Length: 366
Image (cartoon, rainbow, N blue to C red; front, side, top):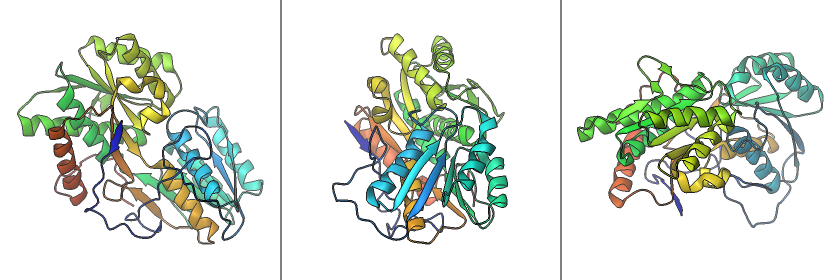
């Protein structure tokens, strides 16, 4: 069983609008495959203009169980609700594919081109500048220019909850986190996780240790890949050998290696999944998960395309937060006690209200 923490009193949930950072994306469904949102039984109804939406994926494939898959689920959800939206995706095998893939999409009749991942930021800026009549949007990078929109998430907030959860549940007194690459969309999660553990230590007079990242020194552990599961397993087992019994991998498909390490440990090692609800996107390792730190990738993309189909392409940036339910924490396997749930609910409200200050320098601001 899974429950998602929601703070209904924090934000007034209004209409679906993405013109500013205070807006809430709709919960997205999926047309097929595993997803991150909620589906609808209502029949699809064509509305607005016919648009062709193309998504350029980062490395890892469309079924990476993480940011590519979650983002593409948003496209499928948008199409399922409005048949006037046609969709397709283009995979990237390496960073060298970003520019040609974006160029091909822009020249191939796509009205809206969505890029996935902050590593694509420079290529997106160049493509948007070269194709002023095409509308671009990028997941995990700020929008710049009249035709480049940013779909961003303050995942330090959700990561904070994950860190507090790990510190509350560890039996060894040591937890860990590691990333795919040392880039802001990754380290922002790790910053939040680290801060959450420090907050637990301060408020509970404890000394839980964090392996793999230190926000102050910016030194940490990385697999150098978003796809290499063997490397992910090796990194996770190394942390387990140093005493960590709960690990938070921020590495896309490479993070599946942490699940394999947990399985190999016979359940002694637990994991907190990233980006999506791990019990949906990496179900084979669900029983080893105590929680998932999520960002509503599907909802952000779906909301963008819904506005595009209405003929109004959003400008500027959307920033998903705890207040607008763009990020959150899922309780996998009913791992949280009633007391811990209450603590996390209070912390969520305090972060959303600004009472608890997140200090990660990677937080999106505009």
